[in-house]
Image 1 (cartoon, helix red, strand yellow):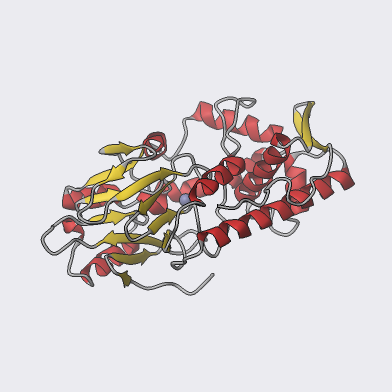
Image 2 (cartoon, rainbow, N blue to C red):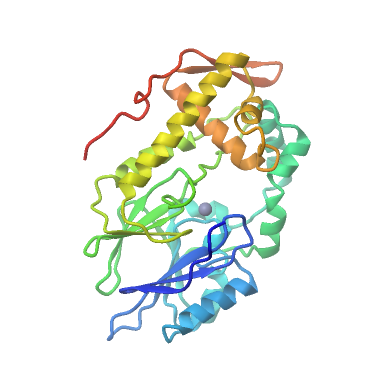
Length: 347
Ligand SMILES: [Zn+2]
């Protein structure tokens, strides 16, 4: 893990990191400092609902002469608990509003799905080769989330293109699903600054979480494919500075996205080679060969990665899937040439 970042001011933006208890380390909240004649105090993302995060936020705000009670509006990049966890408590203290993308609604009402849904999820994972014990391990994190979870209703839902009026610092909402369905980035056009949430991260590749459908064989969103569609929409932006939810500020978002694509292409080719060598495999078997050392400890991430890449190979016609005795197996049709999946685009 990289060294923790501190509270820091960048013009009207103040970064306040807080601990999350997750492997990812601290999460950055960003405060939009008001103009002299305004009392409008906007906070982007909140940190988890724990006392140490609450104290970190309070101490950060105090450095700029504010308290939690001064916050007038919370904007959420997405509804993972490290981003919205403290929002209800801040609203109680300040009376502020909470805004986020319209797709947030379902994910912030409860952290634990009802029993029939859990049964369905188990069937879904069984089909991909995962045992029930593996399923329990995948969702182990729900216990921790349960300890810190508080449901959060939105006061206003945002959609792609919405402009959030902030005194001299309007933010434009761009919907960027992929990491999760409701992810948005906020763009400040005059200063060319972007709040990228978990969509663009400087030190780690965002995991595109596996979409689990309502039925074991239901339609799924191809999250990795969707992620790159979202990322490509950001390429034309002339960005001066990006403020990510984890890690330090950075400037060249195009270089970052190009790096992600290179890594994804390498992984796609590696999966093709694995299928070439071992014949048709279940997603679990692909994951075990792709990540021989860590697959067991990071089942959710491994499963999301494998499915995201297999979906992409299916979409592009390089792989086929067949079900036999309740197990889904993927077979190689042909190996893509480099540059086929991510052609070089100019903007
Ligand atoms: Zn997230």
